[in-house]
Image (cartoon, rainbow, N blue to C red; front, side, top):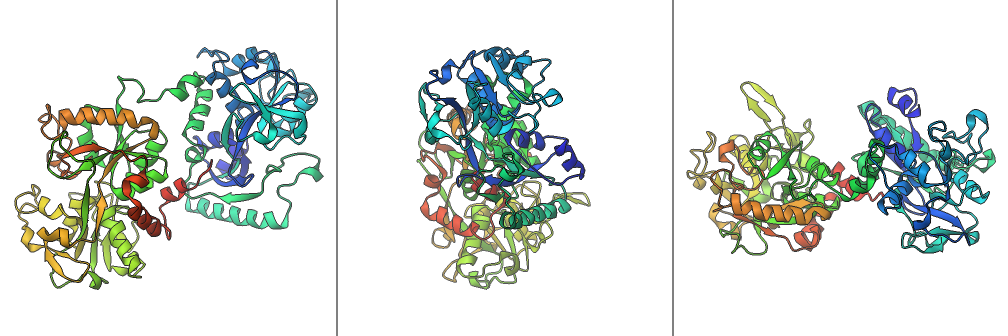
Length: 632
């Protein structure tokens, strides 16, 4: 009822647990977590199984015991213990059975506030609420919530209580059941728990500009209330955990980019989704789309041209992403499995928990002779040889995209180092795909031109004609004064290498490089005239899917890589037949090489990581800010 009232504007906010955060995020309510409870210095807590000392059974011996739960669908009290029981094969769940029936048959008796007492009477057997309040999912049922579930255990109604680690007041009389078939003291919850669970959070509407302002108003209101009102104290009302948990130390303002899935984490979302669908949780958690040999890796595409090329690649399934950030998010949330990204975006992906799998290699070679790593040079290209790198203020700039190495991170890092800190005001006009379309950073962008129509202006995908390396160079050709690209971009689009109308007649001699020492050199002199040497693009994926993605890519490039057995039917590293450049992979890629670095920091190198940290310290993207927030 409350979630619906918030969605319709009758109410504005409520604090809920993980199960309800998931429910709130679904259609039609579409709410998002905006503020998290901070317990024991963290925005997560530990789900534990509490028993009385001397009761003499272990976690794997829970069958036929009497159980106390915080409430049906609640995280620590239901979702986590039920999932853990199934994961450890303590009982079997037939897919056509309600999970409540499975648990009713597993325990001898229970109190699960919110359960249907007519359909599953044993789940309400231990509850003590009177008449219509019996087994209600609210405080009118005395055994509801954390304090109620613990009271159920304390009063010997039940033999085990599923609660969170801060619930137990009389620690010397109780113990925790551990998954290794042992018991530990209540203080050992970090070594003996069922799962770490994201803390309760305040949810609110987030669709409109008015909703965004409301979120800020709610934060300001609660910030003041923490100081002027006993927000985390319920004892004088003779109850526990009213509005917020009594164990809360403070509230944490969540980053704008976080939605319910990112806050809860993919495994927890999978667990709740499985419980809601009534499917076997154990299989859902341990089986993913890439685990079966016959299933295909899901490749995330960025823009319509990417999608067009991907549709011809029979070795993968194609998942459409709006932007690189969207693809990173989809992979994090298991909606896709892999994508090839620029080094700057590999940094963002790494902050989101993803890892590099294979790197693009640009030196002519074969898969068997390629080296172990590759890099390229970030350069500043101009038409007017009178320009100098330190005299670009007020000029028109062309960038590959926000957050990308050669086109944004390196040149903007240079400006920051030179204390010309605001890129949005340094240049008179720009095209930086992925920026705010209303800003000067998008004023030169043209979007996708179809007849007289212009769509997707400044989109961070191939839908914007000035995006990517060739797009930024095209921006220079048609509108700009300087383009920040990589060292091969000019030669790839000039001297007969350009196949499109805009680049077919271009000559490399008409362009020059701006050097950091103030000089100007020819395009061929990139090794002595560049802004920075940056890591190659890399394919990224989730850690657990790395081996499957690696296996697939090695097999696919033997077929569809340069000199592959089936290159004529589809070429991974060519884009011209799809009316684009650098689609899915850079066209200059000779082969993909395995990345042996264990994480993104090792792959990118300490200098590049340090530069990225400095560049993002002022105004990180919403995704980077969301991924940098550790909910658990």
